[in-house]
Image 1 (cartoon, rainbow, N blue to C red):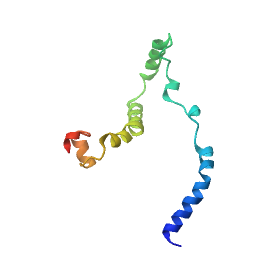
Image 2 (image 1 turned 135 degrees about the vertical axis):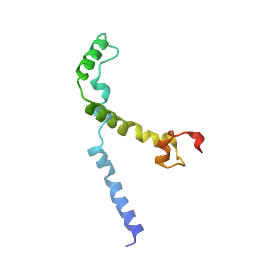
Image 3 (image 1 turned 45 degrees about the vertical axis):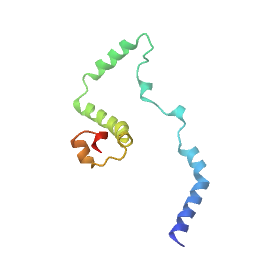
Image 4 (image 1 turned 135 degrees about the horizontal axis):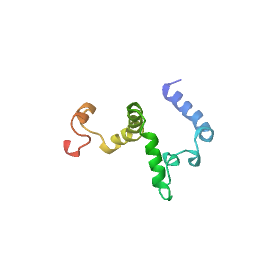
Length: 107
């Protein structure tokens, strides 16, 4: 059997099971938590008091925590968008980060 036929066979087998996979593994949007679920409601009258309470609790957190938090945010949120924002830069990644990120004038 050729590689081309084998790939087609694999894809045909997967195609039959895709809807089952979606039902089993795809989480409905209503069940996915968002960071805002754990933050005070800005429209609440007690919003500023709740923010102050969070600040008071967070003031004793060490640098290790903040470095990890920021690193996770950059990894999860920012890095994937750099690629789409920059398009296809003609510089290497090292050259991009040693000068400025994604300047369109760099040609």
